Length: 450
Image 1 (tube, rainbow, N blue to C red):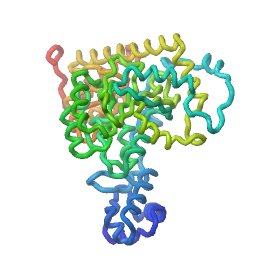
Image 2: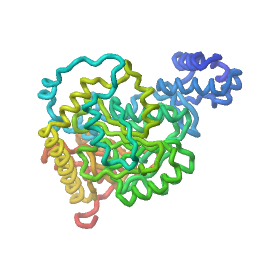
Image 3: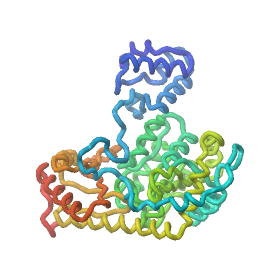
């Protein structure tokens, strides 16, 4: 945007400035991708305090009108749909890009719903159901090193992460994110107006050098997936977790958020970045992967101060999580039959992913299944070229570049959700994928040579 455009932005309060920018966007004077003036320039031109300009941009980023790109400045948001998990709308292709659990493996809540009668919950009562709190404390307590733990219930993991960041950060603060990264985390950080700092992920999780470099850049928060990292399937090894804790020991007030989304389904042990002396931390465990995406509930365990500040953003009467949903969750997770079904589902996902990885390896595309719902498949050619070839064969896949912050190798990856394919369909997809690689100019390794 030219400096002359700055003069068209008007207002003396944050709300007026934000409304002025919105009006410019609505009449087409500002278009997606256009840069807004730096905060300091805008404040000088309007004769307002810099904090007023910061507040105006924060309102716009929270509303999704603009996005912050760190040194790239603040720009008008692209109005096209943001990449996110789930089925592709209106596609006639077989969708193996969803990231969804198998609906047939989600426990039926009918019996639990029938037994949920109880007195109504009124304003002013505790926002956490006592029964769920008792169960959740046991669920997370054994896995945490800090001795003092407080619990908060939120509407899913994404809700928890957004509120945790908002209670600790201000616009332009830096946040360390795994790279490649879960789509929702990328979206949450950008919409919040924070600056994402990529930390590479390898087979053992976040790299030590990457985290150290992020901390040297002044990140105020770290968002980490301790196991079943999405999209890679990586889980922290005990050695790596210990090394990362050692790095964080010098930064006890950096907020560490662990999103243990796969928890009860995981085939890997939980290993944590959170050391016993760390001062600002949160462990988030949602129930959506094993009880279903519509069960929008997550347990957040945290230090007392973080819990208090998080509670201020969960005002009773406006944003508490329904006690009916809390009671339903408790009824399901304490049912032995449901517990057995969750264990069986975890085994199923692991077995199906292992089997498909074996098919690809036999076809010259060496693949190892990590933990989680998906497979992260390395290709000898650009993933977008392979994706186009697969579309011609009737398949819709997700390319690695959608998850990238700075990791160029991920552009040669596909993330596939294959656990619900029949054996015949899995065989066809694997064969079509190998053919798509050849058509895109690649050459799968000969069998036995990978």
